[in-house]
Length: 270
Length: 270
Image (cartoon, rainbow over all chains, first blue to last red; front, side, top):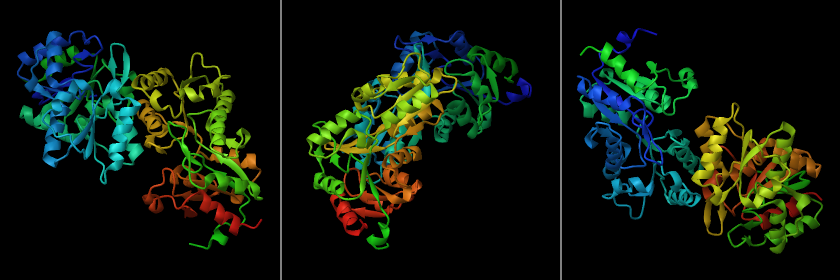
């Protein structure tokens, strides 16, 4: 692989995944990943632009940011690109009224959306609310529609909590796709629109940005398909086999966010 | 389409799907489909061999047969080919110890199977037991295995109960396949081994048999891939679009089992 100076040349801004990079979430609120609080602080003191780009769809942005601030992170709501607000915009643009299969923690994000007489289904990381009854209800709504529309907030396979690996929204999206013979529309990583909107909010071009994430497909593969470089951290849901992924090769692998920031501050022209 | 006499020439035995053909299942035990009790009786009085070929995996064969007999059907346990006994045989042959994600109604079928220290997951139509927690447990078991083995009792998308359409095991199989990046082994329709075992139990060759079912893919497509003819009934989960299915064309469509039996008794040489 080329030297870091070459691999990081021209980087002007950093997209940070949250879960598995900043902290490991958990029923207890979660714990920061060692060195990440300081790493974010150092990044923000640098000339690099910083934006948080998450598929979090269990908690509203407000709740997520409050939790991260309590863990010591320097982060504000306006710095976060998340799927729920992007979904609300899409629903409004297309006159869609969703049946929501989402966690209670994120329901408030849809307060302004008309959910009467649904003409689509929106699915997010619903955790325990992925009961058979709730899945069957979403399935029945889709089967009643002439043109069934399923919108999924992310398509992650799983994430890592302090208690272990947890199924994410992706498997449930696949279940409904198969049951109804349809293809979901994904809002969130790895959707190109989502990365582009984060870039737009930073005022950068794709080649000026680098994504740091723990998900080889959603974070790294997704960013690279938009022309954004991608560094994978060996924290969160990282598994050693990711470094030999059949389809995605990161622009670099680092032990954690702290190492990524060391490298960036050392090698990027500021 | 050719005349019925031609389409039914040489048929010596009939494979009957149960749910959606004999009866519509439901929380109340279900109701017979009009004419089906008499149709089964007439078939059994004829020279045609009859075997029931079901993917039922919510109830044990004993419970299912008891329920059908109470509804008036002439059926005995030995006449039924079902996935649970076939799975037990496969587990024994390969020394597999399953983690079971199944409905309580079928757990007794696995009484003789060693489930300690699991080295595979067996998934069946678990209905309400498809909770997030149970799905996550099955996922975690698979992720711990070096060579994860997932065995699915059928791969149906949904079935019809008296209360409406219900998600079958297939969508949950797809969810675990996607979450773990693996491919499940299916025991039951449309697996060729399953049809072959039903043929073997009838002592017939594929070209001598006809499958009657409500599932265009699982029943009709599965049977045809084995060289067995397939008639689809317009009961159960049948939907009008099935008659224009992009991949599967039944050898005939009939309103219900009664019409199928009328045609068989009229046109088959006895």
